[in-house]
Image: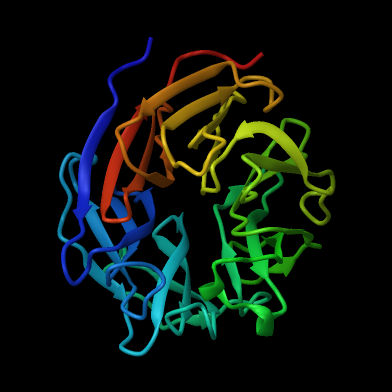
Length: 332
């Protein structure tokens, strides 16, 4: 039986820091919860965009005022992934000139729960024009992170509002992110091409990919632990052109938090669960259809696998925490 969902406001945008997006919830080893996100300015992209972090010591009921993680006077910055590795935090961050010109990719680390951070270090092998997405810790011990990359650099002008050359792949590490290798890439796919990956029971990896203007997600598969990927094919999963989040539970079920809408509307926000490795989605629950854009959910499954805890942005000006209760059940 489902238990009640949990909800709270993490952040309300107010001048001069109205905009918020790219939020991520993580749980630290000591039990503190943190949310890293981008704010600053009235919209995105803007040069005022910067990275902040809020905290909760009561499992998401209340949240602290945000502290600055990374901010510059002459360029924008935003986060794309945050990894908790014991007492170490590893964040993937990005800087640009305010319109995604001179887009550069970095990592920063913290050993004290995000109180202090190292200086940015260039991300190899993708130093430019790339977003790193959510970590998949594989059963064979490697870290595999999906990437969305845009090339060639000189062709990128996001002020036009049109992207025609998004590519997808992964970066792979066998030493907890100290060094990385890159896979072959697939594409191009039009628009922003956020992706997520999940491991299946046969050690194959599945990648789902945002495909703007199509009304659905794309799917690619790797049979060689992420080194190569099949050509993307359409799925029957509706998507309005928005980021989504996959999780695999210990019993083999796969959770998808997303906007199941084939129009350009990022509403409703829903939890789907598959017990047959994403061939079908037998559990589908609308979490909220409150009017407005409910975008970019990202978070974690708790240790007891009772909830998916995540944050999303409401109309790009509020960050909302949601604890979605998971149904009990076993995978077939």
